[in-house]
Length: 398
Image 1 (cartoon, rainbow, N blue to C red):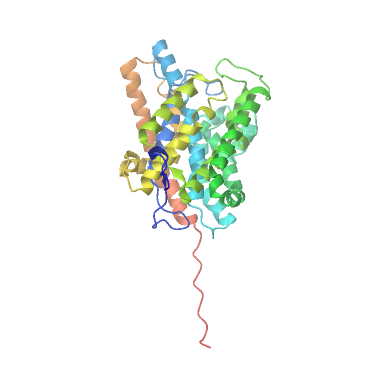
Image 2: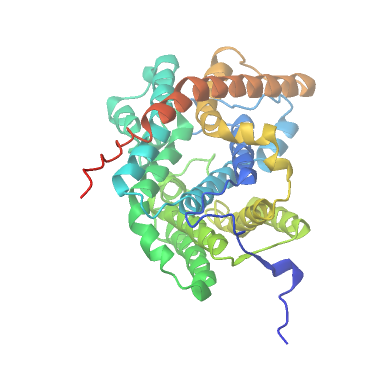
């Protein structure tokens, strides 16, 4: 008699309603996108200093002890949020892949998804603050989302700082039509090995960044040299392993091999991963410390959606926030760095600091909604799918 798998590792197979293309909606993953963007926001708003322009502190908290404690506690939030986006990107693109789709059509949709929002926020950042101190050799590659391929810190973190991650996404999109075929050909029995290989790739990249990349120049604000930070965090090729891990997890979901992990264990993994990210040395704290919890969260939310179980992240408010999360991620570079520098200078006591955090959050949310409604939605609706082809005209009966 066959022995069933342990309850915590029981797999969930897609229901018969799931089409072969895997285009069933996964609302909990949409809601989770805003949580990732919010983590990046919390990281930015608690920065004690910034080694590149604008160089002043971003934190509102005037008490040095409070400011240092918050900067330490939220110091890994940005790393986790970005890593979650990269894994989720590989998962969603593989989950929604259509066999009949062509590479040009795919590239068209993805470019229209990221470039309009980027161009608007790039222009606003240049007009409001970045144009005053950004030379052409920095803002030009930034405009075309090539700046993260360059190791100069004023370039890969210049203009609208959060946009560096779009360089990574652009590389993911460029290679996805080439990667999807071998990923789909992985035998189901070897999918766990594929996931392990992606994690091993992250380990190798971290070891290279730690021990083989030049450890100069150094600044007190950073745990590594500028060059090591660039290679281990901002340089797009090493981040490919997170994207590929997401692709393999999606294959598991489509083939019915995704483990069902109880929420209590997912929470325990998340806490352990966050604690590790706060304690292990860089660059292992950037991705490696939390990559397994991130994968577990995506697995848990996917199995919940496939089983038609409601989650807080699948609620309508959470899904709405997830839909504007890309805009929220991009506009925070403007609302934080410009508003803080121009209108909210100085430090504040605890009540005032918390109030200003809430004000800037609401301002960022409003700006994200405006960008989503005025730019992202109309562009995708009008141009992303191209013109429908006319139906063929039937010839005369033979």
